[in-house]
Image 1: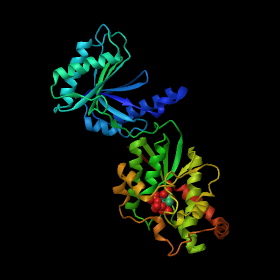
Image 2 (image 1 turned 90 degrees about the vertical axis):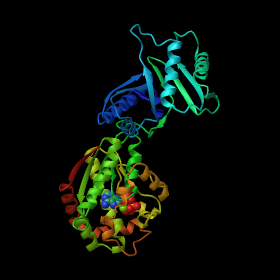
Image 3 (image 1 turned 180 degrees about the vertical axis):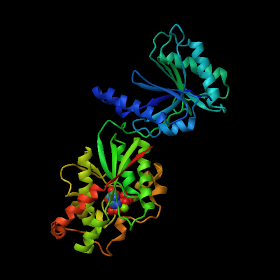
Image 4 (image 1 turned 135 degrees about the horizontal axis):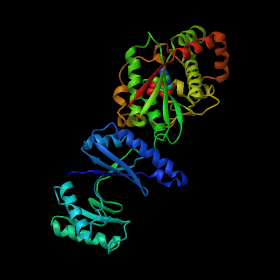
Length: 400
Ligand code: ATP
Ligand code: MG
């Protein structure tokens, strides 16, 4: 079957009232962005609350895979699309019937199928209404293909015939990712480690249309170049959806060593986390990010008990901390990680800065007042170390 068009379905953004235009423009822009990376010639148009892609010389799978990364799309419908003639007429009923019959032949070599025809007729110049037209087309299909039968309740094939500015015929609806188009919200700063959770957390917030900037705390020479590359690759997984991720790599070694030297070891992880949050907060304020994102989930590890979350959260006071996985079971997170192709990278066994200095018995119910008191042991020197860490920030532009 030579499809040469796609009808793009989008749900949530269709109901946004006055903002609808903004959302649709953003969606078109994102569709154009991903298609610019695909082989072929594409023309994306937006007409009367519908989006169409005309495609030539393109690779079907590559194109569909790319469209599956565009937030805001709920359905990708490979279509046959027939333009109006020189007098601005759509095909007449015979012409439509022929196009539908050819469409079925091209898409369904095996005709032992039940079907239903659904007509949407925006062009009112036809002699029949939509219902009559659907019945007529159904009859013509039955004439053409003996093996096919009608089932109006639960058909195997639902043939959509749209008589709009063009004649569009499609039957398959390939699910899109849903969500909102990138560029319709704002920006947030993701604390991106090499684990399973934080890339999923970033993906989930990005899906709401949020641009993602990220920060990774590494601890050379205790953590390797490979561990860092893994994080760059995970930023790439998110960039596949957002177009780009600006990744800050912060050298955390001296801060970590200093905390290790001065503070009780069982509080090390919590205090380190607080400094990660503080530094991420500073980077967020500098970059205009309107929140932090972490992969935390209640009770998953000692540093994510509710008490620990108070301690890590309290150091960020001027912007929200988004924790999209807060109530997720690990398996649910793993499922999404698989789906977005992050899992294989996330499970690569490279050391993490947090595992290196980890205490045998970390506090599971830290008290914020005690933590604050122990942090005082760090005196002004810690501010100097934070300053140096920010000054030596390595910025990597990760693009799709
Ligand atoms: P993940 O799978 O995301 O690493 P985790 O289950 O290992 O999460 P923790 O190690 O407790 O959990 O980290 C909690 C959160 O803190 C992470 O989801 C991430 O957002 C942030 N984080 C942890 N380590 C780092 C790091 N080295 N760089 C940046 N962010 C980090
Ligand atoms: Mg981790």
